[in-house]
Image 1 (cartoon, rainbow, N blue to C red):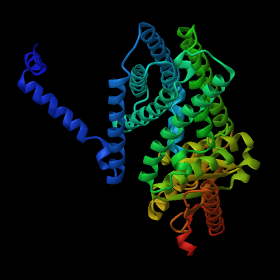
Image 2 (spheres, rainbow, N blue to C red):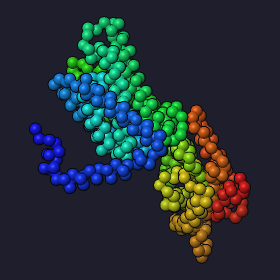
Image 3 (cartoon, rainbow, N blue to C red):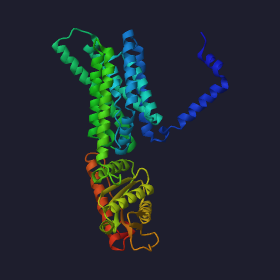
Image 4 (cartoon, one colour):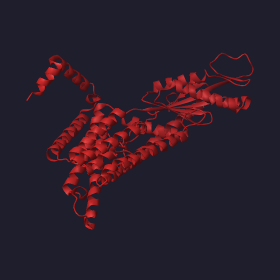
Length: 473
């Protein structure tokens, strides 16, 4: 028998093998994993080692399969791959939302993993997991160490469920004669397996988040909020239904039905989220309305607070806007608001949260900036608004920093701006119970303070920026 190393040398040669090895090492060294705190790295590596040992035990003791098992596994993999492809947009949107809210992301394709653990031999169930997770990573890429840890956490959950099912000799897998008591016991075992699966995954994923962010395992940052946990429970319930269906005599048809239901659920989630976002966007300026801006701002503050950062709020109140409306008409006023919104977008970062609470007022939330940077940002916004020029029917609205008009039908526009920074106010958001409520109170405090500074700017000459630190707030 030819030794594998001889075959490799024959195919690539010694130097090529060495170069491939060096490339792999360089790639591994570039992983963000090594920049994480030591305790996080130890936790991640410990999970990988434990899961590796569990997988080895399963492959050694539960490797027996039949032709029908392989056909069933193929049907599950095919349906799961189609689901991953069809749900890509919704999944990327939910992943981005989870990042904004600093909560764990629930992978809805997980319903295939639990269903496979219930209906397939353990070795094939783990194989389905590997294929589905690889396809998921190709469709919605994440850093390699994150993708591997998520896969390891799901594998650990799957191993836990398999252990419960194997130990209890679940009736769906044993083929024993059903009785009422047996059916009740089977249902209880199934619920236990689902519970073990969900708890293991939540503890592992939440544990690494808690370690990385110095927060409690039971905080919303680690275990997620109400919406996240509802999606997790529904995903697990879908896996239970899929597994039971696959255990039936017509089980080869079950993946198709599961795919249809999963895709319909994904579409509904995406449609609901799109409606929520659309309802929160101002039609005229395409900026966030008051309530939607507050939700975004609270999410951003919670994420920034867990990372030890700070946020700042800028309140912008247009000058002379009532005169523009009364003199040039509301269409011209709308054009001015739209132009100001465009100017604000050009002068802010992609991650800044812009909003129009109403009337001629705008708000901006910026994270990870100090007081000086926030004041400079506010000054750039002031200058951008003071450089706006809007031409309408027989009227012109020109920014206050532009040259003085020679015509009498030219109106001026500028902004009085107030700034408040979380570090200036010594605003702190405590993690744990009531975190979101405290974050909302902190944002309201920042808005109230910035609004006071905007009033100072208005009463001391307009077209200027006033910060909380200037007035000793």
